[in-house]
Image (cartoon, rainbow, N blue to C red; front, side):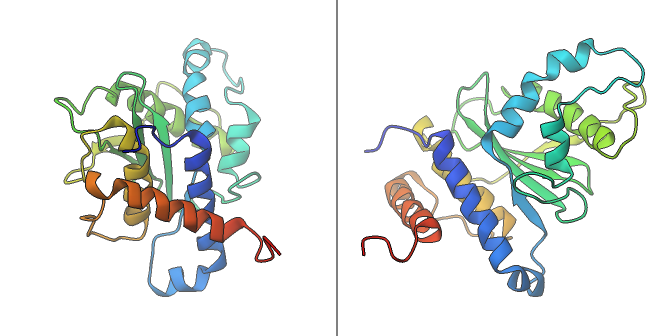
Length: 225
């Protein structure tokens, strides 16, 4: 049994593949009315959360709070090069739960101003990382304001709502959280309701399939010639 979870670079590879598929098959996604979405690099949510302390300390009116890399991501100037609220309505990401120490997934719905949390680790409490998500909800709300060129107003700011996804496949093993979340978010982004194949018995096969898919997406056809 594989007892090591997916690393950041594995998840980044999977998300890059999913982003490429959307770019290459835009007409198909449009014809089947699949919501416009993109997948964030792993460092985005992690680094944004690390700015929480600086955000809380910032009291100077008119002062810019967020690093340009965050605003450029929202504006579509850097990878994945999708303008939030225009090119995409939904943004997906995964970050490490600071309390649970396992990967947690998020669906950031820009129009509905809502963050849905995806926690697939089977444990007694699924609320342990919610305070972390609440911080991100505040940061994302204000990041969108500043990225649009407006001034952040902490007093009038209304953060994104937070909800927890229900009826998810659950794993008994923390090292399966990565592959579970990649496949769950992929299904969610495609509006696929049947996730019965995402289970512990099938986890190794899911890893193998994902590896092949990433290889086929990015390795040149002339490989090995």
